[in-house]
Image 1: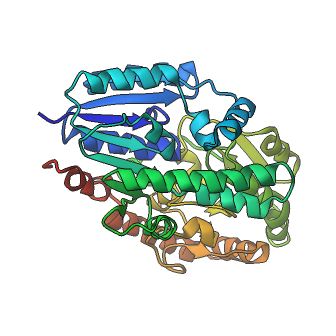
Image 2: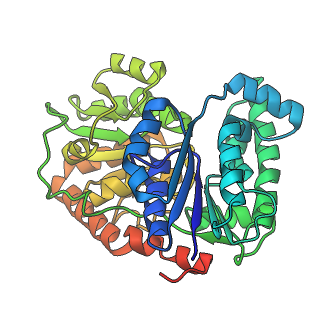
Length: 401
């Protein structure tokens, strides 16, 4: 009887951030194919306990270890050993031993690893099918960091990680049966970098739970106040999100205030950095910190904004907003990978003036904004159901659905 080992860099529950949303739905899809053993890391003890309470009854076995690696120590070790810093940050000797023992006892027939850092836990010599869900091309992200930030030593660190991690990703992809990415754009980029074909590198896109993200569900009020409300959602210690909200608050919102003096900007998401919290000193800016549910804020938004300068894969924040029938203004980077038509399902702009104009156009004509939101939700329902998006897993693993 088949049994699947699911290796995941952050325990999937709760599915409240982009990586955990994808990994949770992947876990659910795998559990429909065969019993699943989960070996995962967690960022802290609280996350580990929350995940154990939810997942233990759903797994054949469950192992979660708390990640304790120090970034400076990981960097030094990685440089000395000639390996990616990313791997060192997610290395845990206890988890590695437990995975080796589990596979060594027999019974595991298939392995699915989620996020490139977990490839290091795939036991050498395992001869069953292995899928590697890289999600994004992380090495390309670090290359972009290096291009954008010329300060030393950060530029050197990012350039080195791009080079070393890129070689590691390609080596992993050559060993596994198939490598998965969240969008065709990411898959195509990796095919070019790794020189592997479409038989080895596949796109398996993200989905959205349109029953949960449904604008007709009654929700507690959020964002109450005067003036049109723009909302950004995301993990607020993630560098691309920090850069995006700082740009919007400092450069774009003042342009909107020239036409809508009472316009407001809500930054909604967990773990805001001091840099993000400081934005509340600017007129019209609110930083919520972690909220139990982002849906009330999406429902309250007159427009959802995603001015990301760097974005990889498919942005869950946009899928959620569009499923909630909210009009969206996104940068081209944020919109890449989403199967939607600019001007019909969302607005796309790339400079401060263009984003401000797009936001004001939505504030000017609420009927047009509402029509765009409804078109966006219809697109999500037709195109982005999780079951349909993850259906290829059974075929890739050779397991009947």
